Length: 382
Length: 132
Image 1: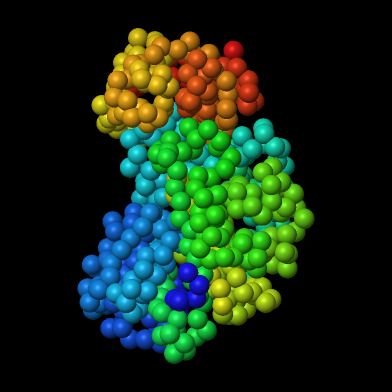
Image 2: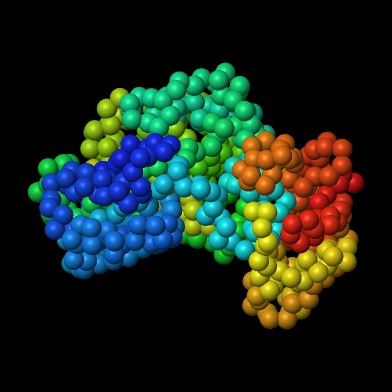
């Protein structure tokens, strides 16, 4: 995989806590924006790819095809949530390379801000969680990731400020975009004064809950050259998973402090693209929680295990650091469309359209998707 | 969540044990390894013959969190409360989630705890942990 296909159109609705529109309408809005941005007609779309868990049960492919008059020649889905969004381009690549489709649409929308149960309801899928965890009051992602953070404190040591710096720099970035869901300034003192959700995680360590949608259009490099926008090439996709069920992964994985699949996904990506993680200019890292960013910085190889706090403390992940991270504010401050926000931002960075958060000379960036036990890394370049 | 919990068939033996104040975990008769959560076959070797082995109930805190925000409405009157993730020397590979019972002093990771059996209220009986 080198530069044979590209993202040529992007669209997003603004992430909000509660939208007056339902999730299908939000998806339609995002798709229209992406199609318009690509400079094509909706009838040009002949392929659809999405995650395989969330969209098929809320905004299914056939409904989108019917709404947009799409005669689908290719239709596929992978993983769920963030990993699904990050790896959907891999499916699109198959179709585009084989000539099965000319323009492939990827979309993702959520209404977890307004739906009863929000993101917690999703976990009711898992019988072991219902039998062994919920009755004990162990319910909700903040408590799952709090267990990881508490274990990290025991094994390596971690000051509240170490997580705080991640949340604070992402809030700064969100404010700079002018579009973030959370625009209220927050410094380290504000962070430390914020209430605890589940020890040691405070509210600003947790992702937002959003209503909103994103969409993007992919096509071959040849067609991309005719589009109105600078093509952003898909340089590679790494997907990996581990043999642990999604309800056991937060408690039973022998080493709780490395996310499943990351090392394998990275090595697959590096092998197929010929590009090493050390060469990238920025990283949009799946930040369901601040601790997730810290652990992935280590798992992805940007620093050693136990050194994530120091890596952030040195300023490496700031907009002007050696590895700007979550340049738009991420899920902690910009919006929570499960890596969708991150893909849109990475495309903006590589087009040079990121405005106040633009990373100078950005040529290569990654987007990660964490959907334990699945993991995905998308490498984009210009 | 206060409604009835539907148990997968492979979970039932655990709760039958709890009713008798016995802590039991599934162990493969072929490879002799424990696994958790309960599966239909041994996930290590694929063996179909599993026995539920009784363990002492002496555990070690692997991690913990004190929940301040009621993510689950059923627990809104109970926050803050502490949840422990506990491993067992006599059942390697098993970690159990349970509430901290007793004086509320949180045992740090690595410290010893002991299982306590709690009668079921809305759902099946369950277990919690006390500092040893």
